[in-house]
Image (cartoon, rainbow, N blue to C red; front, side):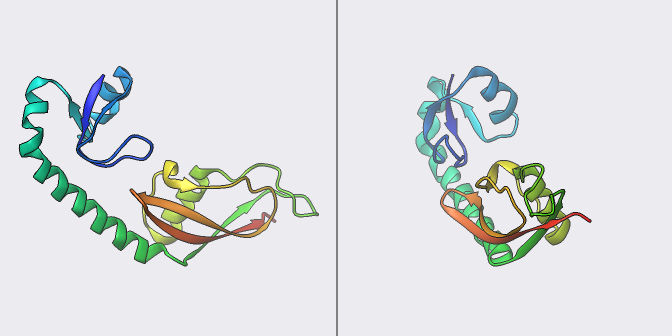
Length: 148
């Protein structure tokens, strides 16, 4: 299904672009969440007039993302995990656990999909990135400690 994006989305496109996605994704997520509209003849014709509104919404999202970046950049979060005596983790650190930890510590809701995470297999500190919007990313220190 062809849709017109009303906001920039990771791995999909920028606001105002016409992209093709699976029908279920469009009908169940993008359109109900007002992130896109169907790219029919009428909406394609109205795209020129809507582009200013789309751009202003996009600018607002960029400002919000920059404010979030200021709040998060350089902050430290800590997650306790099960590990052996050598410091090797029994499980992997997940994007969901990082986003929940950010919410718990800093009261900022981040989508787990926004967390850019390499495979972490042992206790210690590492730097991670949070993709806030388009190319705006925040850098955080993630500390993995052994659960006692």
